[in-house]
Amino acid sequence: GRTQLIAAKNAYHGNTQGSMSLMGYEERKRAYRPLIPDVDFIEFNNEADILKITERTAGVVLESIQGGAGFIEPQNDYLIKVKRRCEEVGALLIIDEIQPGFGRTGKLFGFQNYGFTPDIIAIGKGMASGMPVGAFVSSYERMQLLANSPKMGHITTFGGNPVIAAASLATFNQLLTTDLMAQTLEKEKLFRKYLQHPLIESINGRGLMLAVIVKTAEIADFVVNYCQDKGLIVYWLLFEHRAVRLSPPLTLTDEEIKEGCDIIIEALNQFN
Picture 1: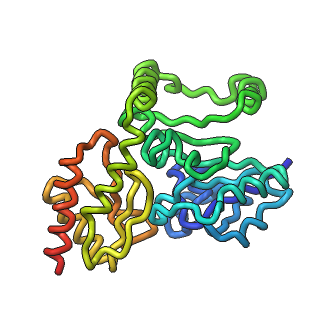
Picture 2: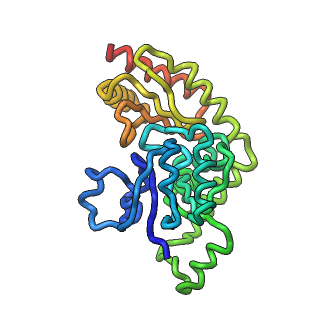
Picture 3: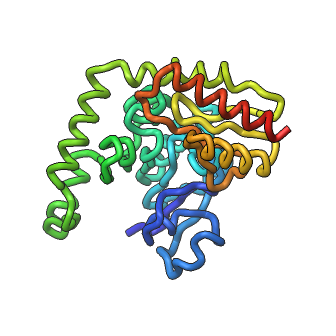
């Protein structure tokens, strides 16, 4: 059978042995070796690299929006082209929806913004409104492979915890019966309206998955620390050191957006 996996450079999928194997950043994963062999890397949005997906490839693992790289969206139907290539060579396309999923980008899942359907998705984070949960989703036929070969081959000690399942169901119902998802795009407009400053070069991302790209890593460090001192939770990104990460709750109000943006602008003014 096939063994090659392909992932994107500057992608982050987690800290288990399997997910660390998919990180193209040796400094961070060196201590975890030995890792899964036969993993190769392509550059996100590089269409020439798509040809590295061949009949040897078992699966391609990508994010619908590249998180740690700076909240990079796919360009020029990139993910549609990757999906088409996977179909041509018989490889599975696996999309990591752990950050973009559950309404953060205005759709239930990030991939729905970009016109394709993956073979498998990984989900978590917003899936249960802060409760610890993770899952992957695929077709009934593929999931049956785990049920019978070996029998119950994916069972875990704490899997299917009823409290966590109830939290996930409640979250899912809220997203489907309210306008929270649609509101994320309106809230994005407010962030872009308020976050204008000479030290800000761009704002990457979509909905409430935003990365404010400032001119230097030193500025980003100052802003993150200043904001946290003022009680505003923002953070860094793993591979884009000029980014200030904004991933607020979907329930935040317009007033809270204005208050948070004022603190960020205040931080930038203080740096000046």
